[in-house]
Image 1 (cartoon, rainbow, N blue to C red):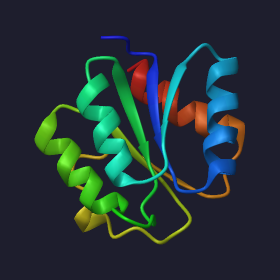
Image 2 (image 1 turned 135 degrees about the vertical axis):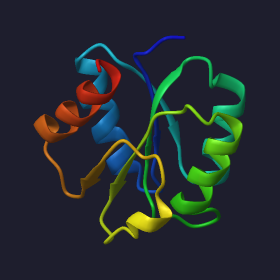
Image 3 (image 1 turned 180 degrees about the horizontal axis):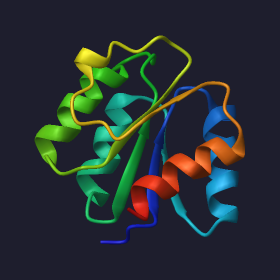
Length: 119
């Protein structure tokens, strides 16, 4: 498994592009998904490569809470952190490794990612 691959799940293309640019500059591989359903499709195919899922909570189609539950069924040991502009219901986020509130800086993003992947 490549611990340096991050799946970024957010319905806002600008957020995905920002996260991808910051992480790629630091040598991480990045996969993207625009909603929870797409994230599950990518995760099913590439889960052996994915060291971390950065998951937005408020998305159309399938939101973050439901996607988190499905990811944890597929891989109970998956590493998931939340990136959100919403106030998260932490009771519905069992097993997550961190929460990053939007807007966030490149430094905050890297601190979260490094803290999980290099733990």
